[in-house]
Image (cartoon, rainbow, N blue to C red; front, side, top):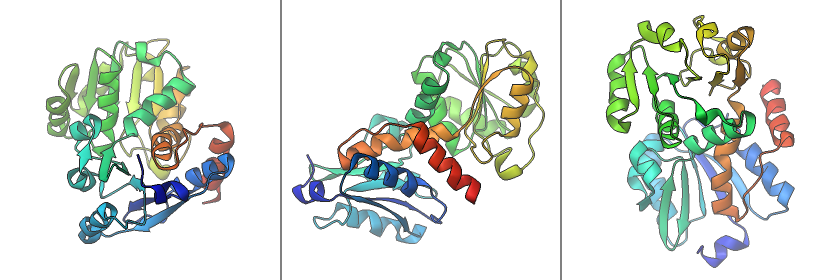
Length: 285
């Protein structure tokens, strides 16, 4: 149960460094207006050296916020500093959502929830894939690998330039993960049902290698967590190969919903209106 003052006009935030390009205020502001809820959601720029003090302020009895989102570079520190960390964030070692409840600062990670909810929405039945290939072993990859494992995908191949980093994720999440270097990517795609790009390849117009998506299963799905541009090089290549695709924008939208419910007391819907609102903002910048 929240403090009574928090239910009157709750204030939430997104904290990071830098933070000015975050689209979270646009998303949460839309939901607040749509449901006629009192409250606010603001960007807060906090340098790494100041983040511990920021979290301490969230734990105080006169904290100005009921909770908020955490983004780069604070996710791992937020996980360590929270009073109560749920199993998702604990296994990941990173938190992106904080909230005050019963006098404690709680933490979770909704990235995996956002990833799977996006696929559930845009391509129902995706989780029946028997073999998934995940490109990238950075921070974004962790939640996705956890989500794929937890949804029961029986064979998950992690491909990364530095194979040692891929092996670290295999050690973290166990079976059914397998680690590979980039040289194995083409052969792993043969007959695979699902490809996920978690790397920065193709982001903001950067180059991406051409992959043999035509070797994947005929009903395979290709998805990319990059959403600027919306149609990344990998998405375009997959479309040319006649495969189903899901862009990464929905992950951004769906990962925001659990936090909104924690702070403002209502589970919001991810609608085409919201999607188009964020798309227009992307195009404007």
